[in-house]
Length: 169
Image 1: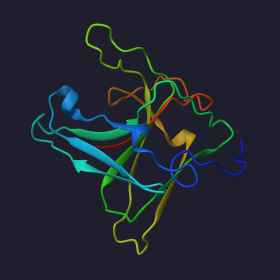
Image 2 (image 1 turned 180 degrees about the horizontal axis):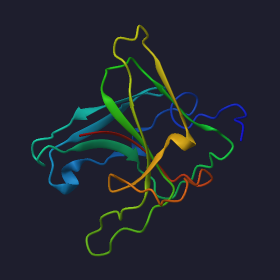
Image 3 (image 1 turned 90 degrees about the vertical axis):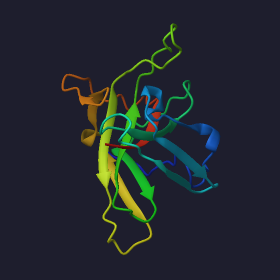
């Protein structure tokens, strides 16, 4: 598979739209972490508070795409490129999903499915104001509820249903 050019999914000529994103933090499990995504037409700023005390040494703060009915076909590409601002030396996780289940009828919560994750950290001593991360599809690790799932099927790049950016511990 060879990438023929590129397409912009968020930002750039497509713009960033705050309504396309929603917080998905550990507050759903009783934690106190909270994330935000501030957007302009060309950029987005992900920030917040990662609380690791409330849940006994663990926590997560993330933003994810908010639509449940949009599908992105990325099969013509070798991977995904993240154009990032100045490095801060913190560890992030980029997540894709190719399956979303209906919400649990008893509690209205989203049901868990396999996630495809890539952890990255940018060296804050870099002398640039812009950083780039290119993630080939084979570098994404399948996980289920935060644990590696070795028997998971490969990511269906023809049917990506969700993007997320996360900080966790």
